[in-house]
Image 1: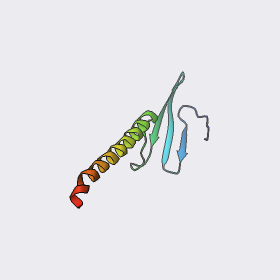
Image 2 (image 1 turned 120 degrees about the vertical axis):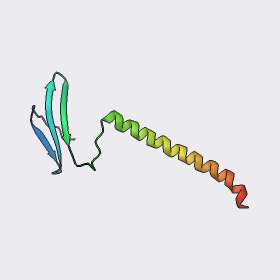
Image 3 (image 1 turned 45 degrees about the vertical axis):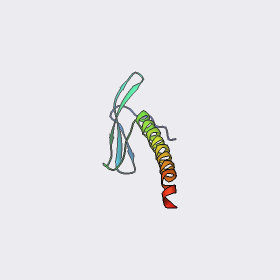
Image 4 (image 1 turned 180 degrees about the vertical axis):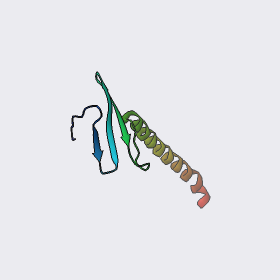
Amino acid sequence: MLILSRSKGQKIIINDNIILSVIEVSGDQVRIGLEAPSNVMIYREEIYDAIQRQNKEAIEINDDVHSILQKITSPLKK
């Protein structure tokens, strides 16, 4: 992990096409702005975690459906 100190108005450039700007610092909160190409997905951590959980649940449901369909269709294959 790279740790940097930045002040209000300063920026960090990532990979020539992502700009992270420090907008405001107030107490223990920092407001940041992100500029990135539209194909770069940017999420808050809690949103990203929720998406990952939902994706895992969808895979489990899909596996269950696949298993059920195999049981249902296996007598038809005889």
